[in-house]
Image (cartoon, rainbow, N blue to C red; front, side, top):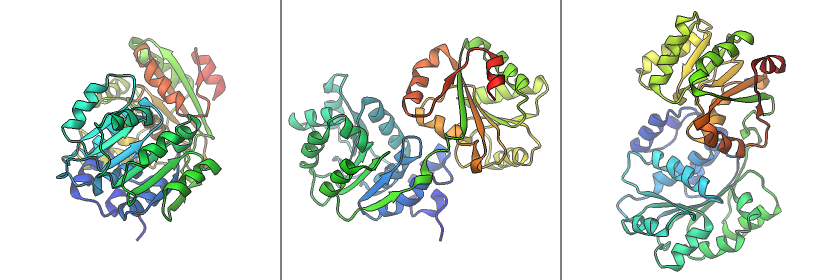
Length: 378
């Protein structure tokens, strides 16, 4: 049987419920290839960049395999930066939402005592930077003797940052019969050395098509006064004659409100968010797919598993709260080799979040300062 969605995987109802809450449906390529071997306890090498669904690729099997009744660290994810530790821990918490698992991010830059206090309460999964992980080990506050699953995330970046000795030290404190997986955007000779040193007959998942189709996309952003966003959106829609687009908002209320405002000025638009029943959502998606609607305002429930041809534009009316969501959103256009355009309206309070997005991609997201510039670039 071909595995295309999370429902095709041998997952518990608790994990499936969390996946449903997150709005995940279809699997990204790295997920489709990595989850089953990880569930089966195999070591895995996965080539995947941030924004391709790799956190769920290792997070789902980790959550599934951990025993909630044992209040010891059973899962360890090592990441290169504080920001990634926070982000990955949050994502795994969402996946474990219906299970009694405690997930903790440990990283430098904040007092260690809060993290020690959390560890003392019993933690199942630790997501940490190498430096803080070693600090906790040396203080006797982190015990990895019960760890059965280790993930090295963004391994190439950790090597570039000089963490190889730290990784050595940390893994020496884990059981030799652990499962080890490694995820890296590039698989070079240094990464292969790591694999050979720590892994047993790993399954290699080098999915080249896993890259999000950013190369054929034009990406723009515009710094705006939040109070002028709606007027700027109208100008973008009108001056560029956009008649097939998804406009993403952060909240259900904001999504419905924006849809109503666009309707009042004559646009054929409906909202899509998790507040609707599944049948209502299916009805809206069908109308959009058949061309009965030109515009869709949506929360991130629509950014996954929504495969509709002919979407020319993605407009981020709100910057997503989590950086990888940006890539899920803009992946709704530029399908099947076609061109696509993504435009993000960045309010003054959203600049920091948008900088996190820019830091995750090597492609150019070009700033525009006036609407005629947008028009001439398309």
